[in-house]
Structures are given as structure tokens and as C-alpha cells.
Length: 511
Ligand code: SF4
Image (cartoon, rainbow, N blue to C red):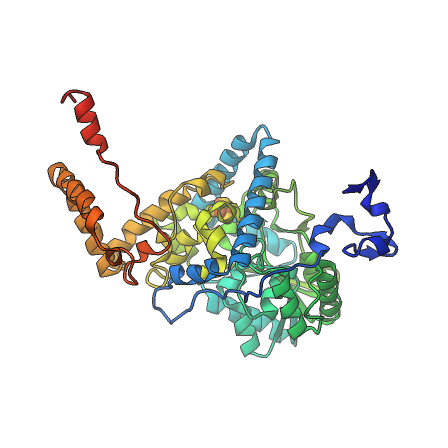
């Protein structure tokens, strides 16, 4: 940072061509991100190819992501950086494990008394002057919100990031009924302009290089396609979105936590965009998944301490906004949405996935997610939490996803609400076999392996035969288009002696 002891920020602009200045002051905080990015010519890899109800081929889409080295490297490093920041924050809090246990207990208590807390929330919110609605599924949610907008003659809606509305296909529905939706979260807006879904629950456009964003903005809001400076891009987006925000007829937010005892709800953002969405127009609609309920305001402190640290490795989000009732002269509506949550609550092995607070830590730590990108999952939720939530929506379509995991358990270790994610992924594999949602070849291979592993003599004979066979097998037996295992892997040289043979010999035949 220094040249002969001189701080770079003190150098004149003419001597530092990479520097970004505003009002005569150098913007040092994002220095690295303001330098020109010399990436190889590499198109942004797109997500999984969806074909109706047919199983999503995550491996195929992941293969395309891995084949784009600049994207794959950036994605892996960026998310690992978040994981490391999370670790640093965690080590700074002595009672971290206590907080996790507490958060898990509060959520389990709320979920096992959900009916009572939901009714308490509804009664208190109504007392605060809020209109509360209930939606069984995505279609009902979309129709309800449309009805509210139609009653107010609203034609445009600004909204903050909400995974629930992604679940509901909300934007597509609104466009089909002629209502313009404008995302106010920067990452989410990038994805909207690129006609893509979010690839991560916290950082929706994390799979994109800033040169990709430059291309998207050039095509949609008229920026310079060769300028990928983040200040330039963010400012251009701000200038383009701000008039739309100020002119919008209605605003929509999601919710991080809904508090039963007060009938209030909390939205955590880093851009303040939820506050704009809620406060600029007079009509505010909040879509809230029923699992977001926590019993008391005191419980909130536990989650606020965990959420941002787990998500981004920062002590707190820039904005932790509490919403109680309509602004003066305005109207507030809350839509409480089930969309499969009650059914999941009844699933003995999977109900605790409802504890999820969508921090994304399990995604940031997952070696498969980091290298394959969120869009390869072809579902609203990706990464480890997606592997256990998505099949609850559609077991056939998402039947491949629980196999996109090494089961290393890192996801469970970082989860702030102690969801046993890797165990649930494994449980889903068993469940999918039971439901006949696993390809015949895989099922037959697993059955044969099971038979072999349960017969020690046959197993030892097979090992001996395989060792000999590996010395003589022609390469094409392993490396052919029909054998996915052979892609990117080398068959290891087998040791001359098995562990069993070594043990037997060294113990003189005694066991
Ligand atoms: S499962 Fe846990 S780690 Fe993953 S997003 Fe949810 S709360 Fe975060």
C-alpha cells in the first residue's frame, strides 16, 4: 500500500490510474474491486436445464460451471472467504455454542406450538392495525397479493429480497397480470434484469463476475459494457432504480422473524432497501412463511447475534428494521404463507429443516456448492439446505439433489440453528429409494454392493480379483462416456497388500 513510506491515498490521481475518486477523495475501501478485471473470454455458465417434472440433472449443470474456470475460481474463493469471516466472528463470541443451542431450542419450541403462536401473532398484528391474510400455497399467495394491489389500483410494486416469493413464482405471476415488479436489492435486481433466479439465499448474484454484471447492465440500463468498475455499476443501477422506487404504487418485503407476542416483524438487510420498499409507497405488503414465527421479542436477540455473523461474517446487518403497523395514512397487509410447510412439519425426519433462518452458511462451506454454483440445482433453494427442502416440494423433480453432497457434515457444523443437515440429506437418499425415485442402474448397483459387503468371504475374493483386473483392464472400461465416475478421476494404484491381509500377517493369524 505504500511507496517509499507514502500512503497510496496521498498520491495524486495522475500517478494511480486504478484509483477511483469522488469529490476529490479516493475511495480506498473498495480499491481492489475498482481495478480493471482482465478475465479470459468466458461466457457466464447458465443454470440447470429444466424439463417439466423430469429430474434436474445437477451434475450436468455443475459440469458446465466447473468448465468455466474464472467463474468457478471466483465463486469458490468468494464463498470460502465468507466462511472464514464467519469463523473469525464465531471465535470472538465465547458463548457461540450456547447461542446455537438456544436458537435451536427456541425454533423447535415455536414449531411444535406453531398453531398457538400463529394465532397470537395474527391477533396482535390485527390489533396494531395490520390486515392479516392466510395463503395455503403459492397460487393462493399470488392471487391474494394481486387482489390487494388491484383494490388499490396499483400497477407497480417495489420489493425487497424474499426467498418465499421466489418459491411462489411471484414475479412471473405479476408480469402475467400486468403488474411491474422492481427488485430493490442490488443482487436480486441484477438477477431480475438478467432473467435468472437468485443463486444464493443471501448473495443472489454471487455466481457472476463483475464483467457479467457489466454486460447485463449494458443490455438493460445502457451502461458501458467495457466498464466493470463496481462503483460505476452500483451508481448506475441506483440512478436507474431510484425513480422507479419513488414512483411505485406499492411496496413488498419478506420477513426474517415474526414475533408472536408483539405482532411485529423484522427484516434484516445491508442496503436499506426493505425500508424503502416498506416506507416510500403508502401500501406495504409483507409475505411471511409460517415458520418465521418466534415467541417473544427477547428471543430475537439470539437470532440477530447469529444471523449476520453466520451469513457474511459481520457482527450485524446494516439495517435491522422492525415493522409494527401501517405508516401514517397508509395500509399494511401481512400474508402468512404455508406452501408445504405444514406437510414438512409432519415429516419425522425432515421437520427440523423448518428451523432454517436462511443465513446461507451451509452453502458457503459446502465443497459441492462452492464449485458448482447455485443455479446448477435448478431449484429455489440450493446447497445443503436445498437438498433437504427441495424434495419436499417435488420428490421426483429434485430426486438427484440429495446425491450432490459428500456428506462431510461441515454444513451441520456451521448451521446456527443446529439442523442436522447432512443426516437429513442421507435420510432423503433412503427415502427416495423407498419412493422408487432413484434410477434403476443406481439402485441395482447399490443392491449388489450391499450383498457383497454383507458377505466377508465374497468381499475379500472380489477385492483380490479387482486388484488383478485393474492391472490388466483396458482404459476404456473405466474412462468411457457411460461411466460418470471416470470423468476427472484417476483410478488409484491399489496397494500390494490389503489392510486385512497385513493385519492377519502381522498378528500371526490372531484377531
Ligand atoms: S440450514 Fe442452517 S446454515 Fe443453512 S441456511 Fe439454514 S440456518 Fe443457515
